[in-house]
Length: 393
Length: 145
Image (cartoon, rainbow over the protein chains, first blue to last red):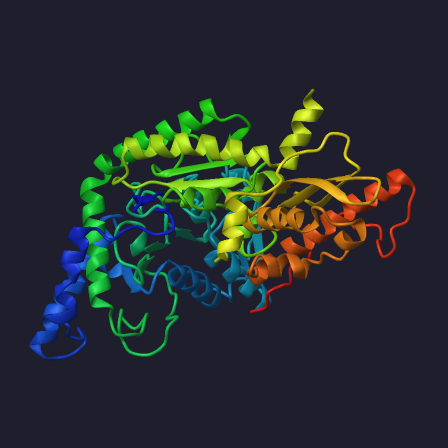
């Protein structure tokens, strides 16, 4: 059997062994519901408190500001819908960007149907929002600004601290979707002026089905899932103890190993970027060259289509992703690639490779070698390439 | 997600390439939607398709349907080729996922476009052949939630 080369870590990561070992006792041994009175429940409660502390420590938050949720999408939905509801007496205007994850964009569209107004900020060719445009978009009735910390497709890191500063100068709440950033780059909620932050366990070697919403003390947003009194009455539902324990452990490891892990990933990332740029013609690196997630590589290969590329890579055991229409289930390519100004036909030929520290230089060289052949093969059967070459003559 | 036949035609596409001075050539689809097919036909005096080549920009299904369409028209008369429908292409490939049905329509259109070009060049009328539409993009339906 061919070896699996997993390069889709922005989609999900493998739960690390240390994280799994930490979680396992909470399925069969300490399976208690931590909300119960008996002392058996106390062990579960203790584990949850410990995990909450680790989740908080990674971003400089207070323990009581961390709320466990069912994942990144729930956190995003909660932050926006609850903030919109809580502050509707102040106004009904929300500011976000055009390159947010659908958990934010579709929530904004839902809120528009409820009578809210949303400004979607443009981004430049690297995927960064303009602080000037942000300032100009703020109105007296603006209640919340939500801009992602790092983009899931092109890896660009937004100027979060400056955005938060502008929000606070204008008395507006600031939420950031940090699903791709939490555990990968340094975050400090105070230094970055963040009021609310979403993160998800499975994006940094933790388990799926668990996330957090950080809510700064004093922010008056209400519960989103109604029911029991868990999470200080703000998020009902029996606590997912193994998941929460796994989240905490993954956050602890991320904090301890961030520099080492990041350095490894950046070496691999830059090696792959350099090889593609120098060895394959008619390509475009998407996303900012340096203000970029350590593990993200995203290219457009002109004259070819992304799904074909993915199928051929898959046959070699390589898992990657694309923003082509065929992979999005609609006829439009990724909204992020269109927002950075790419024409449709170029956006269809995108490839996202997201690394982990487990990847090796040999794997990356193998991918670069094979990619060269695959791109050449697909261009050989592309009428767009044929036209381009003929017109050039 | 794809049948074995689709994967076979994607991995080993039949009749990829160009024909110099073709009897007819047609290009359909648009890059905006991510699919473009170009079909070249070489047709003899008896109206039999002697050779056929294609080039496609698109997903796995787009490549496989183009490849299968060339197989289905090769050696056929113009009238027989006109009867190769998108359904016939799909059936020959053991089916396509619902979101990829438009690729088979594109293959049918590519045959028609190449035949139209042949008819125009030779000032003949092919019964049952209408001027092809260049862009068969389906409108994506708005999702409501």
